Image (cartoon, rainbow, N blue to C red; front, side, top):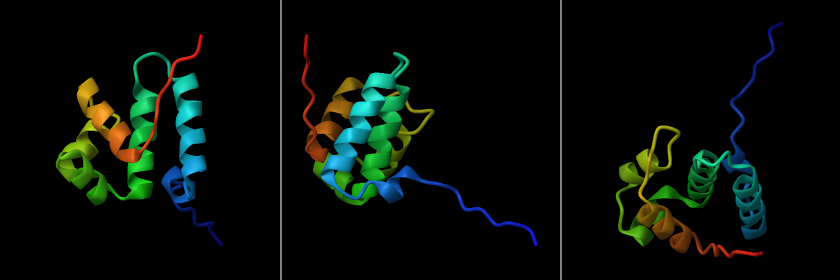
Length: 95
């Protein structure tokens, strides 16, 4: 009998605010410098929270958010900042 596998999606496991924050922190630390992991993490968190609500909160379209936060996306920093604020995430610098 052949085994059946389903696609694993991190968004299915981001159940709490703490899960989301820890995931984003890990991606911030491991990002190779091009923002790809940060963009992916924000997209995963957005899907876990609900892309429609995030679109409403940011004033951006749902389709625009999917595109900006996709692996092919190249969002402006202002878009990333809108998403971060709408998600209620705070970024801070430490020496």
